Structures are given as C-alpha cells and as structure tokens.
Image 1 (cartoon, rainbow, N blue to C red):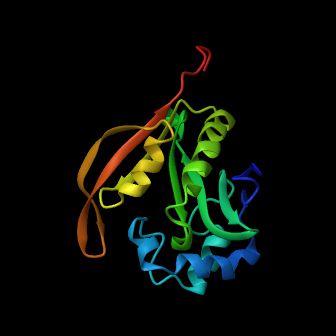
Image 2 (cartoon, rainbow, N blue to C red):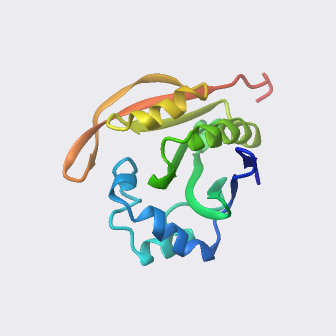
Length: 178
C-alpha cells in the first residue's frame, strides 16, 4: 500500500532502515508514548529505533507502514493479524508525532488503511484498544466506522498506574465460503 492522502502530503510505505532519525525525532516524546504500549518506550533511544526497524519489536512483514508527511516518517500504522481460530480478525495500532496532532491526518490514514487491510487479509473484524485517557484516538476510530464495544477496566499497567482500555471494532461480512 503506497497510498497518497490529503492531496499527496501524506503517504504510507514500509519502514526503512534509514528512518532512524525521523523515528527518533517523533517517537522520543512522552506525550506520544503515553497512549501506546510499553513496546513504545519513553525515552525512545537510538537502540529502540534500530530494534524496531530490524523487526525485533513487531513483525514488519505484516502490513505495518510508516506514515510520511512531506516525505519524512512521523508516525505509523499496522495490524497484528489473528492466528488459527482468530484468523479472520486483527488488532490495529497507530501513532503520530505530536507536531501533527489535531489536523485530521490520522483520521484520513485510518480511513484509507482500515478497508484496505480488511480486504487484503480477508478480515471480518478489525479491533483496536485505546487508553481511556486518549479521547482523540477514540474519535479517530469512531469517525471511521468502528463501534465501541466496552471498556476493559484496569487492564493495562503502564507508568506505575493501572489504565482502562476502551475497545473498538469494525466489522465486515465475509462470503459464506470463508
């Protein structure tokens, strides 16, 4: 997927080893890390960036993409596909550098990516979890046809606190032969 969005200003492409500096510029931010899993630490070091780009943190062979603005990586989006009996579902994750928050960028990216990845992987369900303290990310999902399914109370321990996770999903009907 090499989608150009928002008049060509925003693009998606696979992560590349030379994205280290751009990744450090946007990922080493406590505000960005606050809403993400502990796989995305703060401070975010060069070793963290190199491990990520080497595929040691998440499987980069899955549909995981860098989000580029004006040709420079400043965020990412991807899924972790289910396996075996969960093979028709996947978990969505995304992030964006703070400089670009509040501009509708991630809403546009999810609008392009979600239907594409569901068709590409033959998914019936695309789910996402958002920390209850991150209403902006929840709005991105709601604007893109995700329904809120509930809250997992005190399900994540991060930065010394237990956090509630809001659960969302987007569904599509598969043909009977699936």
